[in-house]
Length: 171
Length: 103
Image (cartoon, rainbow over all chains, first blue to last red; front, side, top):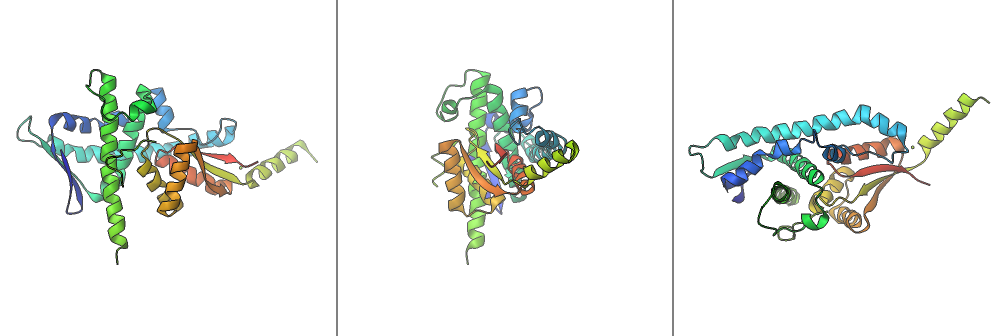
């Protein structure tokens, strides 16, 4: 797999079928439904529980906005991911092109997925920092790999965004 | 917070009394606090602080490291309405953020 910048787009080339499948799982992984820990993390309290009025107002007025924002990000990502289905050969490697204007949606959706998975499997800080853990022997191991793979992609997107900021500030 | 080192180098009458208390609570300064999260990337948190508070990179990094090292950092202090807006923005970026009353 290679990540390059091409005509202002982030292009991920040579994606093997396994990584392509992990990418396809971003929208589903970001969905906290039926996982209370994930729901609690994605929609965390805005204040100490003693601030009852504030927390209640937040639930009514702010939380629906957040849900819309998060859904919009995963919809954008799901739409970009349709490219992964356009292959002539079933086991061929794929290429994914992410338009620059979709960068924020990708960062958000990847973060939703990482947080939801980490909450679901209750990963410790030590596990999250063990980048060379192998082999993948369980669904939990695979989810840890997913969290780190998605983090890797976030770093690339952030790096590209920083490049844009740097070049925009050049005289 | 998580980091990938190989890539990142880079708030009369009983009714009147109650009304007065509410007003006082609103007028007190509030603080915006961001709490540590082992999942969010350090570079991502820095970028969010730059975007939400308009901080220069150095200041954003200083707060990010404070969150990472001390478990929390006070990012802003002021009126409740604005503090709520900041917390809302931070939640939009999926950071663990709360608003608290100052003593």
